[in-house]
Image (cartoon, rainbow, N blue to C red; front, side):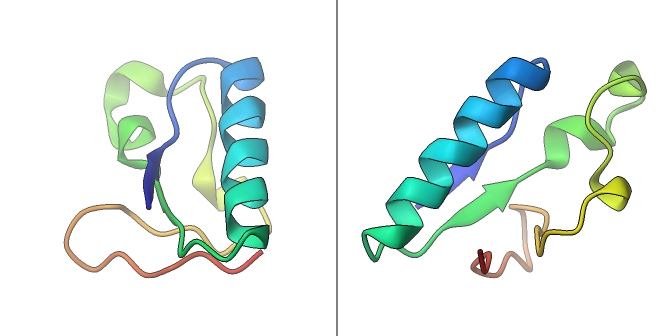
Length: 66
C-alpha cells in the first residue's frame, strides 16, 4: 500500500498513524515523502530529521519498517 505524506503536521501525524495501523494488520506499507522534496515546502516535514525508515515512493521505494 503506497501512502503519500502531504499537508501540515496534523495531517502528517494522522497519515502516519494510519500507515502504522495498516502495517500492524499485515499490509506492506510504502510511505511517499516526495511532496516535501519540492522547494515550495521548505517549512514542512523534513525527512532528514526523523528516525524512521522512510523512502521516496518513486522508483526505488521499499517497505517501511515500523
